[in-house]
Image 1 (tube, rainbow, N blue to C red):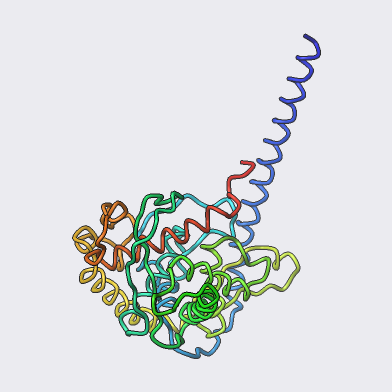
Image 2: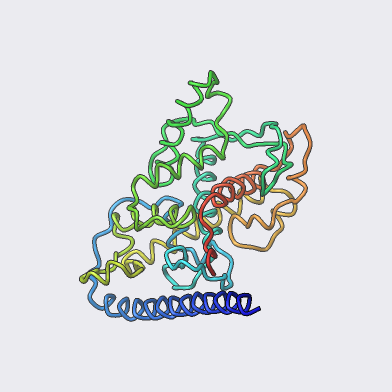
Length: 327
């Protein structure tokens, strides 16, 4: 009995120590974030607004005007501060997955509308893997020309190069299109080649960081100053160049109407009539799509694109380390 009691006591002490360590780390992180906000305010007063170069693509507009393209409401904060997403102009926290999804969605819609890209819906075998294990259709993309002009378009162009080489080795033809999930995965590989180890924080953050870095290079965002070694370790967010605010609002109006129009024309009745942000949300598409049977010619393009992007990102995210490990 004494031995059992001693073991139970040791286990209880270990659990208590781990809980205490977790609480301490949480307090340290909270304090670091508070200090980061204070440093951010000081840095704002010292920043010099750079010159703005180049035009904004749809991904940059969605990033900078995230308060216009993402639903309101405070999400559950990610444990890892680097995985949290914020609307740059308002400073409000937004849902990381939805921000990454809207960045990709706006890119694909713009390319489709400009006839640089076409999407096809083809039959496939069910994957039996979440999030949609019994879905019997897949979306395939065909590139009409080289994709340039903004960060995610260029990453997609490189992804096409990779996927087409892989398709040729398999004996396939690019005219049949490249599966959208493969393109998203290859896009992520391209983007991660441009990010440092410390910048990588999972698929949603990596997509956002890739666009953010381009916006800093163009002068639309101003990178935080990192004068000390401690500043380099803290997660300091860039701020929007005030010179660009007028341009951002005008371009956001145009893109919002473009995405809303695409949703109304190419969406299901559920998506087309939803009173939501431009482009809508994955939660506002026709649920019956996932269980649809052939033929698939009549499936709404908007809904299928939303579902396919969500499925592709979720499949990648499920292979990444969980944020709640050890909590």
